[in-house]
Length: 129
Image (tube, rainbow, N blue to C red; front, side, top):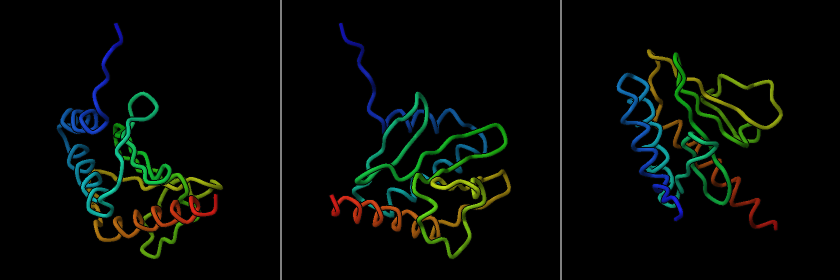
């Protein structure tokens, strides 16, 4: 008999619930930003344990580490970042990340703008195909 897999949204909810410290609060705020920025966002569960968000392609993946929450945008190098949210992975040629530590606040407005830019980029790429 085939093993039933929980929907990604439930897996993400469970993942966040297991993070009982500041990381869970940060992940919850990040998730809300994705949902608020794009009502058509698709939640996914990638690479055996990572919450991810897509719309016409991967937007970003998040991971809670011991001392940070990392939010990595798959096409980050191509996204405008006027509020300088990206603070990790800056040397790469594709991905860019935001590392949140315990004392950091999530700039929800700036993060939503970044998400919308990533969605627009994916939409423009899908129209070229």
